[in-house]
Amino acid sequence: MSPANADTPKNHFQHTQIYGITVDDSWEGEEKTVQIIEAIKAMKAKPTVRIVMSKDVSPKEYQSLFQQIHDVAYIMATPVDSYDMKKYSKAGYLKRFQESYAALADYVDIWEIGNEVNGDWLGNDALVAAKIYDAYKFIQSKQAESALTSYYFAPEKQKGTMEEWLKRYIPQDMKENLNYVLVSYYEDDNDGYQPNWQEIFEGLTKYSLTQG
Image (cartoon, rainbow, N blue to C red; front, side, top):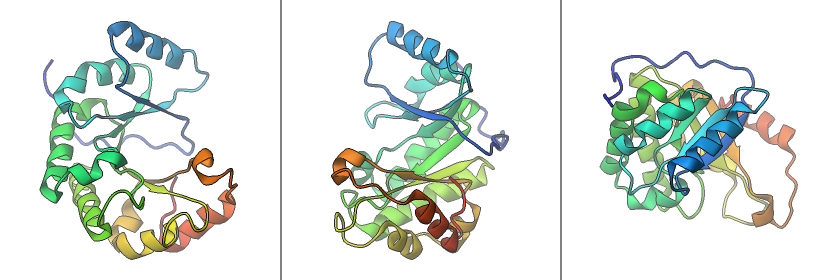
């Protein structure tokens, strides 16, 4: 399969509402892929499929999967999951996005430049911010769509709030030009705590983080 055309802008994905599902590559065999595709085709609305890429799998190895899924859905690519963030140097993180774009741009509608970026398991906050900013600038240079995912948690679960982290570590140009801001939340990990989502998303607009 020929590589994606890395010079073609991918900025045609504009939707007021996104129906999303997440898949990873933990399954094995073509049969499972077919089952996933059939499930997607059965949905009433065309979804956006977030594909979480494994660190030990090269972007080129994903071409067939991305092509098949993109035939029936939009795709949001996650080249680096939050649990792998510490395994990448600043240069290595950017390289992962560059290689992913070169191999997969023809099939990707949104690039997740950072996943659960304020999670306390990611390591040094300033370094995390520098990594995702490099990825953001690269995706911006390709005129492609970018998404940032933050991590919400119950009070006292982490030091500092999600909002404080975003305000401190996300540069102003990134706040103003990100296409989508998403919030990851696991109720089971937060003792059933129920956030006030309207208040949370209204609060994000104060930092110019208005999408998602």
